[in-house]
Structures are given as structure tokens and as C-alpha cells.
Amino acid sequence: MTAGRAGGERVALVGGRLIRGNRIHHDRAVVIADGTIAGLPAYGDVPAGVRRIDLSGRYLSPGLVDLHTHGAAGHSFDDPDPAGYDAILAGHARFGVTGLLASLASAPVTDLAERLRFAAGHSRRTTAGARLLGTHLEGPFLAPAQAGAHRQDLLVAPTARTVTRLLPAGAAPAMVTLAPELPGALDAIRAFRAGGTVVAAGHSEAGSADLAAARDAGLSHLSHLWSGQSGLRREGPWRVPGLVEESLASDELTAEVIADGRHLPDALLRIAMRCLPGRLILVSDATAGAGLPEGSHYPLAGNDCVVSDGVGKVVGADSFAGSTTGLNRMVWHLHTALGVPLPAAVGMASAVPRQVLAGPSARAQDPLHIGAPADLAVFDETFDTVATIVAGRFRYDNGELQ
Image (cartoon, rainbow, N blue to C red):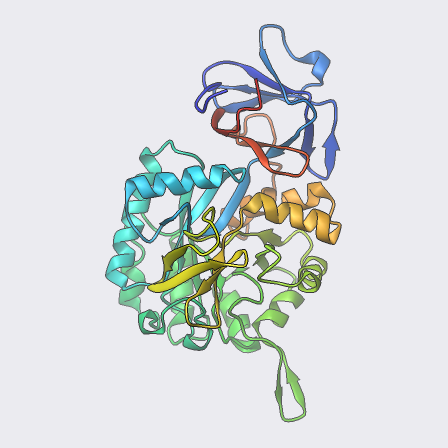
């Protein structure tokens, strides 16, 4: 089967193990018509005249959604190049991803505004791979002490002027990560929320009071837990919680984890899942190094980075530089290493990210319902991607399906 097929005909995906909600269904088909899900019948109730594609026991899942990824296949979203963007979108389709945000790393504000406009235009015209759902602005409003792979000389405090420049008409970011303790951050949060942008805390030294004020201003999300955030500290005999602990103790915040088996030990992943049930999402934080062989070099936020021991690292520094792992492998890591039921792990990479992107007041919705976009992924026994379907069209397939 070739990419692009099945877009204009009625097709039924049958014979698979359908991951939907908190169950795996063994007798349920998905009927696709005009790019949407037209039915979820039992195998025996598939209408006559509908072409059947037999999945032969493979997993059929909602398409994965990655809200934090910087690139793949040797290309970065920081480079406003149509061919590069298409290569990244195609690269993530190989991971079962049907939609993603283009994460933009810290850069001069003029460059970031240009990249926001480019990404918005490209999202309206591309048909390559995963959907480009919008942009995620990670920087430049970050704390220098928690910069990680971001160059400190590119970091600035938010001002009304810089925030306005980063909310261009028709190209506002879908998400922004900032340090809420910075001067001007609360006004920035309000401005971004007024423009419909989801605001996350990250690369931050924020304390309890900072986070409380930011939440009141509209902040609702936390970028990659334990990666660039303040933690528990001592002030004399007193223990003072940091951004991580306050987030884990919250009743409303959603948060991200990078479950590549490198960024976080499994014990921390377990803590996050127990503290944030239904509010934790998987993100790849993938870079241009995703899909490249060991030893490959790539740029990120002005730094020279290298694929080393299955993860990205900043050359000459003691810092990770994003991951090189696809979202499907992170789902499988939760399932196999931590014993998370597969439907729950899939939900953390599909339904919950969709809800986060819709905003803090959005109602949770099953991505596999009649009338929803036919954004689906087929995985084999070990969750390697067999096919990725976006709006009813095969945007990736490995040749196994007939």
C-alpha cells in the first residue's frame, strides 16, 4: 500500500486489536470515509461494498500527538525551510504520530517571529506526514540557571513589546514555555492566554508563590518534568518545594515527561503517573538527531549537539539536548518497563495531549468517535509503526499491509 491511498473511498480496517479508551477491542472495525471515522462496527457489521484492509492482529490506535518536538531526520523546525519541515513531518509519521507542534528553541525575537509566520503558512499547505498543528515557543523567556541546551545569551525577560511581536496575526503559537518568575511573566501569560496560547512553565527557578500567581494568570501546563525546573531545597532547617514538587501536588496542572529511558529514571516516571493521573502526557522532545545514527551531529538553539548513547547531548557540556527517540517507543517503554497498561500509555500520547492543546477548560473527548478525523496508527507486536493514517490517507506504511 502506498502513501496517499484510501483518501476518497470507504475503507474498513479490520482484524486488528483496537486500542480505544481503557480497553483493547478484538472484534471492532474502523470505517473511514471522506477523511473521517464513519463507523466503529463489529467485523460482521461492516457494510457491503466497503474495501477491507486486514490488520492481521496488529494494534490499531488513535494517532499519536507530540506537543514538544524540535525536529527529526537531520532537520530542525528552527530552520524555516519547506523541504526540511516536510522531512520532519514524514519522519514523525514513522513513529505513529499524526499531529505535532513545531517546537522553536530560543533565538532572537525577530527570528522567532519570522519562524512563527513561516510555520503557520506551511501548516496550511503541506500534506507531508503528520499534521502540523501549530507551534510551541520554547524560549526565549527562560531562566538562565535552567537554560539546559538553550544558549544563555539568547534568553530575555518578557516585555509587552516582545510578547506582542511573538503573537503575529494568524500565527500565534499554540503553546509557549516560559519561566513564570521572570519580571513581566504574569503580564505575558495573560497576553498569550488572550491570544489562545496554552502557557507552560519550564526552564524555570519558580517557587511556590511564583507558580500560584502564574496559575491565577492562566498558566496550565508544565514542560518536561524534572528537565530544567527548580526542585526541593533547604532554607535553614526548612524544606522548600520547587516547581517540580508544586506541580506534582497540584490538582489542575497538566505536565509532560520524556520517557526515553535516558532523561528520567523509571522511579520518577512512576511518581509522575501516580501524582498526575489523567493529566500526564508523553512528549518526545525529539531533535534533528531523531532517526540519525550514533555519533551524528546536529544543531539545537545555537549549540553543537551529538547523538550519544541513544540520546542528544550538548558537545562540551553536561547537558542533554533533547531526545532522539520516537513517541511510539516511549509508549512501549511505559508498557514494558513500568507495566503500564497499553491503553493507558497510548492515552498519554494521544487523548490527553489533544485535551492539553484544546486548553484548560476543554472537555475530554475520545479521539476515536464517529465524525472525528481519521487519524490512526497501526503498530506491530512490539509497537514499531506499520502504518500512519492522517485524515484517512496513508502518510506512512512499511509495506506489510495489503
